[in-house]
Length: 212
DNA sequence: CTGGGGATGTACT
DNA sequence: GTACATCCCCAGG
Image 1 (tube, rainbow, N blue to C red):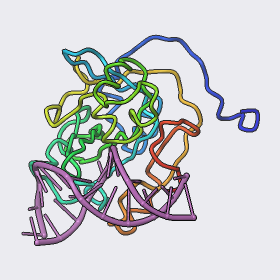
Image 2: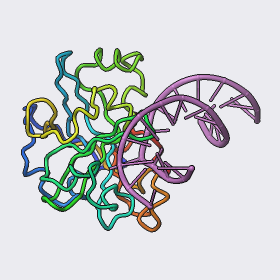
Image 3: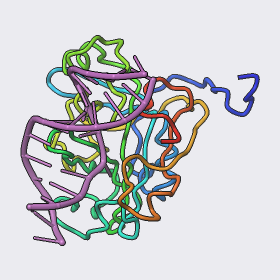
Image 4: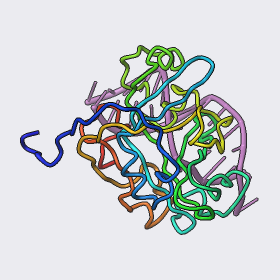
């Protein structure tokens, strides 16, 4: 920390404020970076589970060939073309759900993929859903793991993030934020090299080493 | 610690 | 049919 004085964590007050739509109605790189440290909350009949976002990626279709929206408006990508502040949820590789924040403005298919969380509330619930101890690092250190821990599925497709079930809470500023290329988008040509992944440095729940 | 491979379902060539 | 914005387990060093 003394080595890195610009990156010390600031402790402010402890109020839990739901982020308004104006948070999402901004350029995707800004929202992706500012999402680090915010708390993702999902309330279900089972109870509440929540975690700090420690890793996220920006997807900027239709130009960005890594973005699903680069293929145009389809039934799958429709939520990304809609108004900001909604969830774009999709299934990858047949068994993992991933959640994105739809951002920018309506008709602009930009989104922020949440790639890792640090568990904050509902640890027992998350542990039960994952079949792991509540202290396990792999409770929420990947995009498909965190959705399982929070019970986010296709049923949450298009959900309004300004509602009462699924939303972001404001929080204290995060520690030092690192940047890298996005994960597993090698197929996207030159877009694969864009440094559009953001993560909290040194956090044990970040999914993979920053330079990967 | 690292790397390889299988599971699995949907979107859309 | 092919390609995934992944996860988990196992083998090997």
